[in-house]
Image 1 (tube, one colour):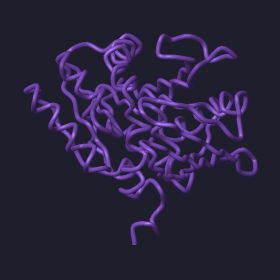
Image 2: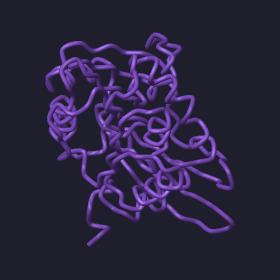
Image 3: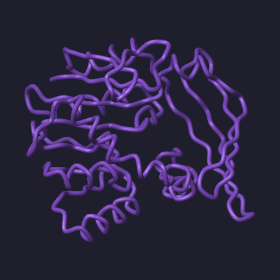
Image 4: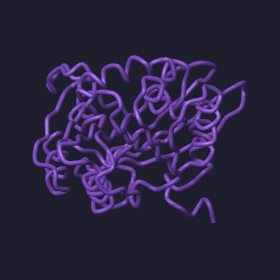
Amino acid sequence: MENEKPWHDQDTFWQEAYPTIFTGWIRESAPLEVEKIISLLGLRVPAQVLDLCCGIGRHSIELARLGFEVTGVDRTRAFLEEAKSKASSENLNLEFVEADMRSFRRAEAFDAILNYFTSFGYFETLEEDRKVLENSYQSLKPGGRLLMDIMGKELILSNFRVKDWFEVDDLFVLEERKLSENFERLETRRIIIRDGKRSEVSFSLRLYSAMETRLLLHQAGFKKVEFYGSLEGTPYDQKARRLVAVAEK
């Protein structure tokens, strides 16, 4: 049964969460984010780029517009269909693959891999997260680099709120959060109200500090790992907005 699967394997979860994930400002921010990613990684056309957990393809499509050879991978077919439709409407030539990041691997195929917007830490075991990074390591060409963008454990703990609410587009969203023992996971219950109709999703993320992320990347094979507090390459310190890791094969 669908509801007996982990949250990340449920199509209904992604359907319900869609309007809070791909908001108007999130879509509009893609060109600037891609510009910063290219600068941080030093990418040059026609580098081969894997957008891992590409969603509706907002970064994949922008990279393709700029002339990069792009493969977007996601487990959600509906997201990929939207991405393909958008790419087709612009006559862009890029590849979209329906696959789980725990299993997708293409030996030494890519110059860079993007794992953006906290698309990591979904799974029930640490070994599954490590498998994702091992796949990424094997999929990179020698000298290739992986960019991960997550909300670091340090940032979450410094700004933690048990209950919160916000408005975005035409949505009113309420969240209730709980930290698990030893600060290993963040459990979130999200209530979404739109046009008087209510829906609800719950999800759980394994939290990683910079030190824990470095250890996991080293275990996956990466030797050189650098951390930043933003895509602009600012330090990962008390002023950081995100945890951005760049790991080189």
